[in-house]
Image 1 (cartoon, each protein chain N blue to C red):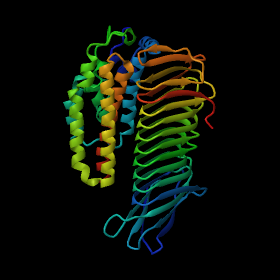
Image 2 (cartoon, one colour):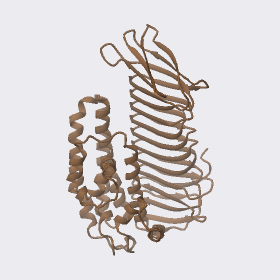
Image 3 (cartoon, chains in turn yellow, cyan):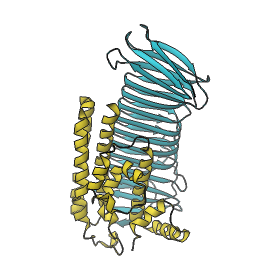
Length: 209
Length: 276
């Protein structure tokens, strides 16, 4: 199965495709779970951007983080404010953690053939941009930690550890079964959970202070 | 637009003041510590009752159709317990750092955040957004678009008419009496249980890392996808499964809705019934 280029989904969400292209993409969606998951994730990014409009991230943090993960190299049709506001999810998408979603998928082998796509393990298990984003957020959280009480800090640390364990579980599962579409998507979402919790925690420090 | 400020020096018994508001207004409250209870009445007015020490002060500011309630102790934040009565159509924006928030009877948009404390809402219409770090979220009888997030707590939603997006890190998600066209629920460590109607063209995605996922409905007309790594799948509905790796796909009825159930390390089940 040949998948549409990722950029097309961005244009699709933005309503910038011709009716013929829309029909073609929607026909593909009917038969491709992988692309539906991708589209769902992109839609969530846009939705999240909308919810954060009135509480923009601190100006000096997100450009730095997004630059580290190479946002500028990606050609998404979302506006820059949306990109920044939705930073976490897009950082993940851009950072290599879900590079399989963004790779040139033309001619990518179908999962059910049992032929694991060669780049998947590498892209999912590395992701320098993802690590950079995590590091940047952790640094930001450490700076603002004084504004949180000890109970809240403890809860956040415990839950980050819980998510880390989930990520580890998912990484091991992907290593054991690299061809599994579900496991790769699950790893992606587990990583997204960590970024999301770190984002919420850093936002919280700013809300309180 | 006009500005009316009522700084109220508290007596020993606290604060009790009422201000008139126009229809469709918004109330904003920020509280450092203490419970917040909101009920509704038929008057176009907001009543603010607050219990606090005699050195704390509660301010009720009316600007346009927005009412802002803030409290402050003499030397900084002090515990204040609020009881508010508002028009049912008044939107609420509440931030409670430490303390439970309870809203009853609202027919308006709600945005409520608590760091340490549960949030309970009966009603809510339009956009309902609840967010907690350390607390349960409970919503009954809402209609509209619900967005619920907690970190360490359970989430319970019943009798929802609308769409739902809910996430928790460490907690269970219980959805009952659902009449939702779109549900997206995820938790890292906890069970997810949903019971209700599956609407034609509806989309339902329930995902847990470490917990059981159960969907109960009287009838299902949907394309269904089940994914698990270490769990099993059971169904009360007769299914012919198409397996692709760790994903099972099948169609019930004409496949009009779309259902995705995932549990990395738990059981996935489809149950027939109402869940009541």
